[in-house]
Image 1 (cartoon, each protein chain N blue to C red):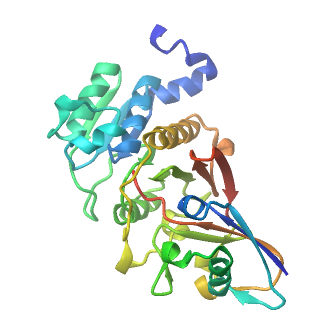
Image 2 (cartoon, rainbow over the protein chains, first blue to last red):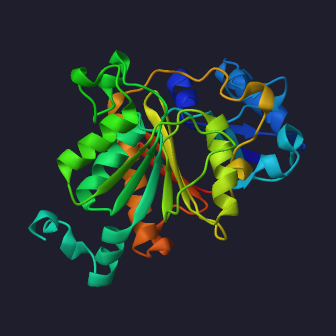
Image 3 (cartoon, chains in turn cyan, green):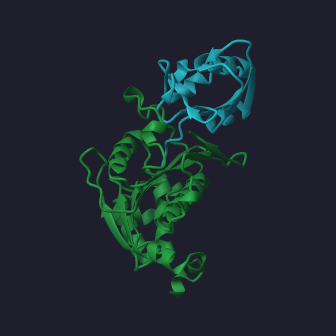
Length: 93
Length: 226
């Protein structure tokens, strides 16, 4: 299974990349996916997206356009090829 | 009509009449709001209500293009209303120098621009507006980045369906760093969205789509959400 993880906003600034590909032989949760991305890029992206294993206000995680907020949040299981878009909070005005 | 001659022909007669009689509310008269207010005034929108409880301070001047050094310490809404009159006397400006809380009353408007700097106030407004079937043009900025999406009742999800509400960490770690051009850029997209709604061009709007703006690498992407 190939999961394309697209990173936006300050994640790009900090990581200097906009996309990571993760390959997995078995279903994984969004939390596990983000942990795997953190390992691959050698930087903990969860600190920009979560607090106490909850998605931070203003952050968005979409699996093929569907917000994990309306699924099982960080425990949403990914079991097929997909694009995961990850947006850290952009809340200023 | 000479005043509007450089954009009047972009619209039909009836569309332009809609712009002229439109009533809008700008929530937040800071980085986004400054540009939104100014563009709306120049476009000739009929009535602009402005909500903001803050006064102008020195760090605002890097991006809040409605204000000058002489305005420091003054109410943003009162300054903004005065600037609107200076730009276009045909536009009615109404200053509402109040904080957005659950007790606020929303005037009868066609569209609201979310130029706020915190999610707590956004969620309050989102709830009130959705119940009243008023569209809400969301903008948010951080460093070199921005996002814009249009919340249209009946056609799109609410803002609180898009973003999680975690009461414990609302607005935690909100950065104050803003690259000034990103504020004017995002605000321009917001105005474009609002005018499309007013002129009945909903099919061209960012409904169930979020535009991600990255001025550091010039990456602009529209992401669909379902």
